[in-house]
Image (cartoon, rainbow, N blue to C red; front, side, top):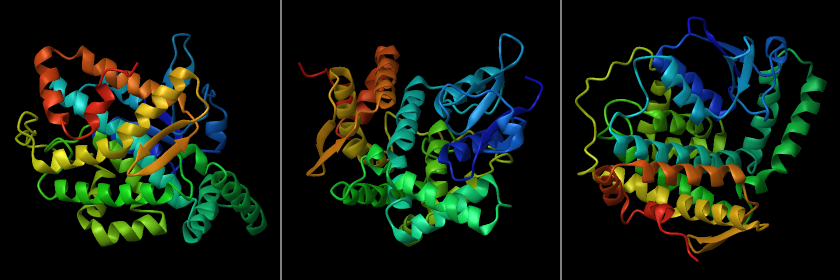
Amino acid sequence: MSEAISLMGAPGSPYTRKMLAVLRYRRIPYRFLAAGSAQAEALPKPRVALMPTFYFPSAAGGLEAVTDSTPIIRRLEGLYAGRSLIPTDPAGAFVDALVEDYADEWLTKPMFHYRWTYPADIAKAAKVLPAWRNPTMDEATLARAAQFVGERQIGRLGVVGSNPVTGPVIEDSYRRFLAAFEAHLAAHRFVLGGRPSACDFAIFGQLTQLAAFDPTPMAIAAELAPRTIAWVGLVEDLSGFEDAGDDTLDLAAPPASLRALLGEIGRLYAPVMIANARAVASGASEATCQVAGTAWSQAPFPYQAKCVASLRAAREALTPGDRETVDHLLAGTGCEALFAPARP
């Protein structure tokens, strides 16, 4: 592609921030359109309205609107050479996909939970999010927009499984993630070593909100994870970063910090994703399981069932040797439960 890619999004969308950072690192020319702008409104609409929306040339000669950051990253791999985000080692590529999915599908729970649970966070987000769409609106219009956004988003807390029972579980998981990630960054620049992969940008996207926008999780990050805060600032624009090519983690002999990070992923993300996949497959009205000694319940989410199916298919596609490397790495972390035979 010779022309700049157009995409529409907003700074308050972790997935928008994820993909903008991807484009900067890969040095792909782009044109960013603010959500609600006249330019964005004039473009084709995706089947599901999500941010960011990318606009790729279609077979018919026009443009097609495409969402979902994970497949878009893979699509860009086929369109642009150099500075790939997918590890060349198949076992590494699988671990990258697993951690990316954790960031996209689990870390978004604390992001949404903190933003729409605590008064200071609600007040900030409710006012700033609509102003990002139109900073010139008058005070009365902004006040109405803030009330509408706040009420609508607070009403959607249950979608991510946030309620008075699960709230403490979500918050504890955020603190543990910060501790694990902070420890990993003490010795490794990125999740899989000295160069970024897709999972780094997925983590970054969620942390642009948790560690750099919403007051309550920002304060927690400032207390627990100064390296992580610095990392978020650096990953925002890695266009000038050049990896030395000498620090790719050996997954057959992984550092303890990577195992600890995978252990946090396996602690909650894995059982919740398994319960959701089971509920979707059976047509149940609720996805339920026990996590951290607490009963977890939320409405089934078909997209996350597809995520689990995709990860399982990716593991099955590995060669026996690569699968053995992955299984050895995941053993005892809790992540291995995602790939255990289904219960009858």
